[in-house]
Length: 250
Ligand code: G3P
Ligand code: CA
Image (cartoon, rainbow, N blue to C red; front, side):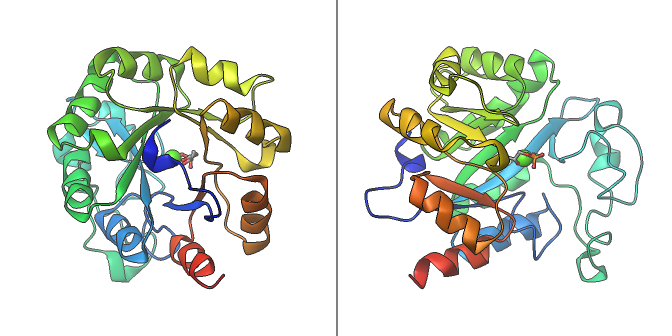
């Protein structure tokens, strides 16, 4: 398994800042990434997709509509337009200066910080898009502290072919009947399910097979405790600061 995604015996699950520390800053902006690092998250999760001219940028949705002052489908817009949009005002006027970062800009910050990177590649993605995204990771010398995850099976296969040295995580909104087999099918070191569909018995099966388990998205301490008791390796949370403090107080 990927060393960083494993908690050691007796340790609480690692903190993964979902879309950055998105409870306190607009998701998938440099402000949110930096806040996740400052909060002490072992990983910062970001969502990458590519523009019409092939530039990887951070954006969760397929369109820019919800989180910027623009409109349109990211895959049909040029990077010059997308990266000029205000990506902070929807969250708070205090973040009006935030722009849509390129993946390269976010990786600059994360490489400098020493934090791990949980890089979700949003599908569908042409092979050239996956190539641009994995190339950005390789250019930042992050292979030993990144985990590339996707719901999209073609993205997982392309990433593995393009950069076999990068660890892969399988994302699932519903758990497979045999999650170990699903992880193995992609050569994955992590299996990251929606917490709502997590079967308690599956955590032990995956752990025994050497596959890390990182459920998403969990924001309440009672739920953190239940998942810690089950033995998951990391918690993907919008409340990275609260999760890190909760661990420190125990
Ligand atoms: O990291 C897993 C989680 O981010 C997947 O769901 O929709 O928030 O990207 P979503
Ligand atoms: Ca995500």
